[in-house]
Length: 294
Image 1: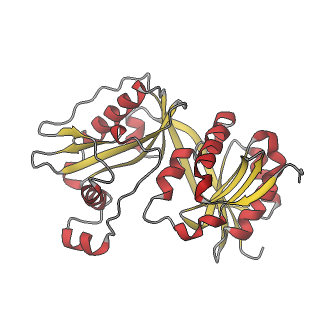
Image 2: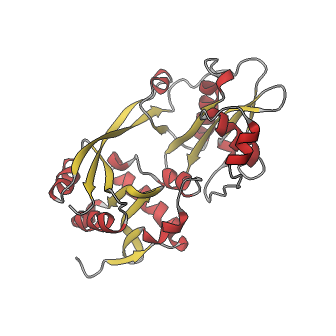
Image 3: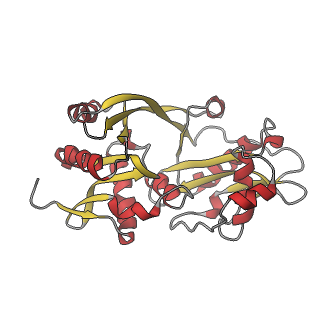
């Protein structure tokens, strides 16, 4: 390894630098856009993210700037390994670190863009085998038509993830098909405000009915200085599905992002729903997996 490259374990003080690294990585090679700063920001305050493992994230730096990183995804066993192109010789080192330090009892897996032959060949040489798992990232140009109206009786509302945390969690509970038993929700769900450093609540859009209840929402992630937004999450409670609510929310949110300088949007999905909204496949990713001990 080059002598000017220094390894360190992640601390919370590295968060902004890690976001900057992911932004720069995707400026240089958008085959890694499935792992962007916004995915990281959404993930680190997700209820399923195991914060106790954060110090295991590996960072490689030059002149105090991150040039490579190994990041776990929610918890050990899957993750991301990224290296700036000018330091590509580091990639095997980063992957080997992830296999050792970010594995679970089964091993370690990561998603690699199907167009990225070089990374695929490297992980194959390190003992990885392609797995029956994949993901797709879709893209939409914001120069497209973004016109859509909410159904009668609904209004737009920008929820605050701190002030409206209970209402948002109740919406997610219903929207992600956990049912409509509020007593069960209150027993099972831990209501904790999620404070995210770069989140702009004005880009998040919910639909509110005549009773003042949120029935659907779309959250967006945008960093000034970049030209794209990341869509995550989108949900609608079952009784309001199929009415065009989600389309209106997404287009309203995208129009707001467009005014801030975004010209494209990404979503990790292969749902036909997004195709109907004009999203098209940008990259397809196959998962590669190395079993523990191999």
